[in-house]
Image (tube, rainbow, N blue to C red; front, side, top):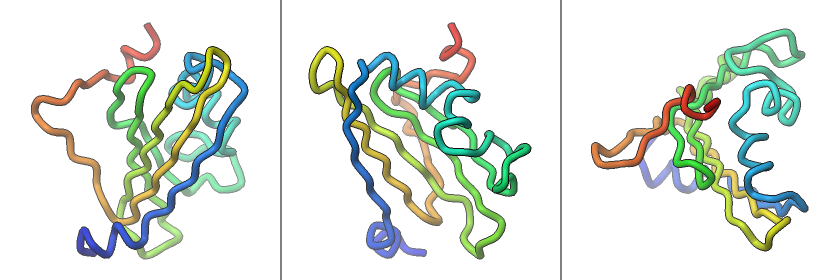
Amino acid sequence: MSERESRQAEIVHECDFDHPLEQVWKAVTTPALLARWIGLAPGGGDTARSEIDYRIVETQAHERVWFAWHDPATDQPQSTVLIELEPLAPDRTRLRLTHRPGVMHQRAANDSYHSTRALAA
């Protein structure tokens, strides 16, 4: 799939939460909380859709998190799911999710990178 075709196939969803940025960040980067929110555990698991595999590949603390996402039930290769967070007020946060089918996330050499272990600290 070309980059242009991928951009046309992007799925973008935005929603606002009545929760502070730190709380939403924790929900999208803590595996147990994320699994409850989207209904499946990272790397599969005991859910109805356990064949889907996803994992955090990169984060920029409290701003964005990239996931590698793969559903073997489709003929699509691994995709990128990007979640971006924007504080709207002290207790409100905008979440923007962008799913790019068939596009792998590649990190630039000078990007800020935070391992998933750093998230737990």
